[in-house]
Amino acid sequence: MMQSLKLASITAVFLLAVSLSAFANSNDSFSNVNLTGVSGTVSGGFTFNSSNDTFSGLTLTFGGNVFGKDQASNGGGQGTCAFGFCGYSWQTKLSDGDWVWDTIVLNLKTGQYKDFGGVYNWENKGGFNYMSVPEGGTPMPYLLLSGFAILVGILISGKRRRTLRTAHSS
Image: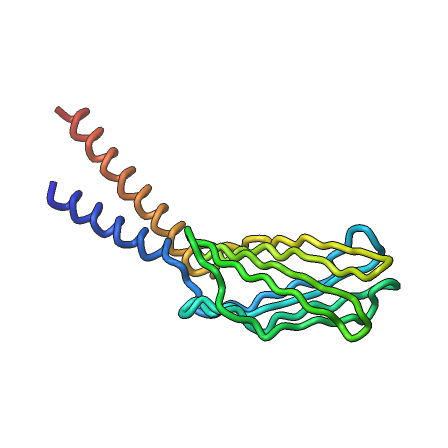
């Protein structure tokens, strides 16, 4: 009984440690996302610091015939955080008169983010919507978790075999 309690305690601590957020700073970027409404693409990036919930280094670069070579940036600032999500929105007017707006929503637990926004002028409007594909963090937690699951399976299987052998020999 004591051994089972110890194993359950170790398992609970291990799963808690693995499920904690693993990043302190996150540098995220995307490229060549198609604009809707006009022909062209957008690439962008940002940095998020989870110790003080700030976004920085926000950039968007537009490619294509309509908004080609337009580039917008923002120094960033304090994100709005609630229920495990942080978000930041910004808007700027470019030197050629085009307006750019962008919103980033970041899932603090998974590191997955959604970046959506648009660019427009008096005659054209293009929007984009990008969601990062979750990669699950670093490979080490997955290896540890799967190795732990295999080890538990081996232990349970061995215990069942001993129980069956004892029952058959009686």
